[in-house]
Image (tube, rainbow, N blue to C red; front, top):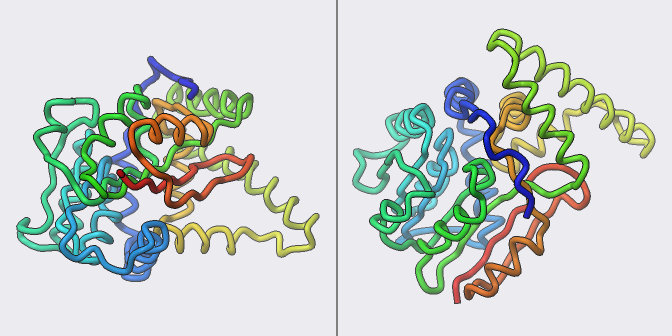
Length: 274
């Protein structure tokens, strides 16, 4: 595992998610449910306890709730907690089956107080804590015997990951008004590269299919995902073996794996605690 940013500023993930709520509709919620079903290999979470670490917008928590789970959502960021609370207000209950708390995955005592869960879920979060190894370990301790542990971690691209770190650091040196301009410029460069690659493969160069795939994957919006990616600090990365081998030593068996190959983004892992 490679730590790329130990002392960098922390990105305001919650503010990005508050903006994302304006785009949320039933189609996105349905896609989030389907994405969770695909990776977990189930069509219901009825009777299961589900812990969402780093709930962000609250969309994955809502998906688990709609699948029948008793959900506990947690996030370090107060605005993310507010987002999740807003989704519960719109689509959830009075808190009897969906509880929300502000806290850190790195707080071992607080995490222990939550108990254990049938599913522990953390998508694209643990590499932003500033201590990814400890976060992965502490989150894994909340999985009950026979339970599932679903995490998504940035792929280690070597030199390319270090270049992305510089892009992220520059974002945080800009005044707030200029940050969306930087996101637009960086995204435009990469979207142009993707378009050329599609042309060379004799495919439609427009990004609409990729954006639809992102929406179908987790109900995400392309713009808010770009903001999250370009601004997201702290930032750590790992190759699949860096994740799989240590967890196997702790009694976790890999059940599902979705990688980005040699590209950038998150590798997704689903383990079962044996």
